[in-house]
Image (cartoon, rainbow, N blue to C red):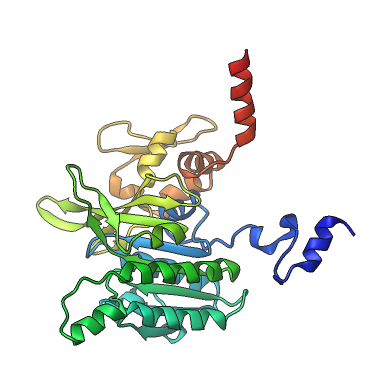
Length: 351
């Protein structure tokens, strides 16, 4: 018996395995959404998507955070007909219409109202302890930013106005306990959070809840928005998904997602600018767009902007391997031979 086999046999952890055979290091189960650029934000690939672990959407009020979370949940439940959603609700600001809009089967959703962080921590750990790898469960928390600590509630009931120093510790404790279960059991959790502005000459958005979310989350997205106008009338918003932290996507990447009041989320958000950058689309004249056949160089007919927002325009571009590779190289984290680069640098210095 080799030393490796011996220590594997002696391990008290039942899931210990040779790294090359470990089920925890196989390819992650990615949930592809209907919005290609959302898949890029989640994985750096047009055909990627949501992976198991903790994903957080943070931003000010009315920045579509809950809707993004439900979009991912809908995609998960659509892929797995047996899947269920555990929906933790502290804001009670998600109307039934949201679930109906995303065509989520509400008979497959357990709604759990919350009043404090400790209540969430005890319940979610009880739930995670009783599910197994292979069970299809997605957890949505809306939101961690609006949850008080138990001490804060008790102080208010006792008429105390002292500052609550326990909340950040409780949030950190929550994520510290939850994260291993999510990854070991191959389950995604979507968390909605708030942001605040740091103090300084050039203040930037900071995710609420202390360092706990930064340490534990696989993905953190800070949502910004710009008004979309038709003349002087606001007809929707251009949301910008700022990649604050990601295991898969280059940090500080910016992914645009367009939402109109009439049509909802635009499936083709953000694609046009990238296709122009890659050379798959050109602007022959101002306000007009034409596709380019990358194999022959042939330029197609001209289209107005609205005429590009359909499957007929995009399907062949999205299936083009050159376009997929271009997007992946632009957004996805790549892993080179780190030690090889170090050795090369040392060799260069010695010359």
